[in-house]
Length: 163
Image 1: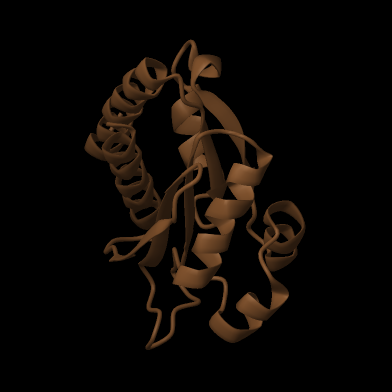
Image 2: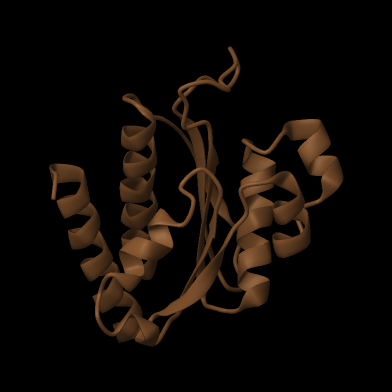
């Protein structure tokens, strides 16, 4: 287990304790991480007490069908955008759960643009009944690094929002 993986495990453990204490369930909407956030949560025994589930919406059609992301949002802003991630959060909460985390980004090694270079990731968190909070991040490293750093940041936010 490398340092990032250890950090992910520690953050998932912290999130579990906080979510259980509140009686909340976490729901995920993942694109560039391809289910790594959900996998890190379900690595922990007893995760059914605090992890509702999630959607891996890698393709835009999955974002639209699985999370009700508007086609117009995808056309106007792209999959890697604040507006898309905001809609991903809302769509995840519509499935169930009390706190949503959503991610969409450019993991690389290709696919980046000047506006959204490789490593650009939008991460959002939303509590049921509240507005989503979205953060744009720029991570360095290879594809694996970008994805793992995204999971770290996503879980850090879960810990913060569950406090």
